[in-house]
Length: 77
Figure 1: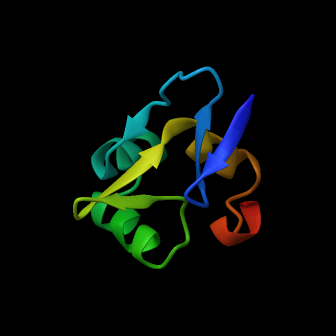
Figure 2: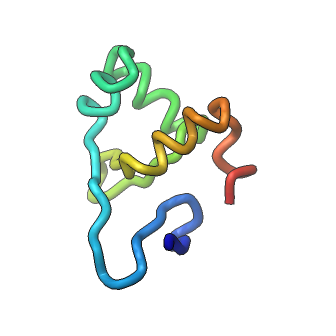
C-alpha cells in the first residue's frame, strides 16, 4: 500500500524506498528531451519535486500519471 508525503510524492508502507528518477531517466522513459521534462516540472505539469536544485521523480508515480492520461498533478492528490 502507498501513502502520500509532500503532496505528489509517495512511499511504500513498511519502509521500502521507491525508485527515484532523474530528469534524464524520465526523458528517456518517455522519449522526450530532458529540457522538455524540466519545463513540464517547472510548470507543474508532471509529478516532481525539487531536491537540492535538481528535479526528482518517483518511477511508480510517473507510471500512474501516464496510465491516468497525464492529468494535472494537483488533481491526482
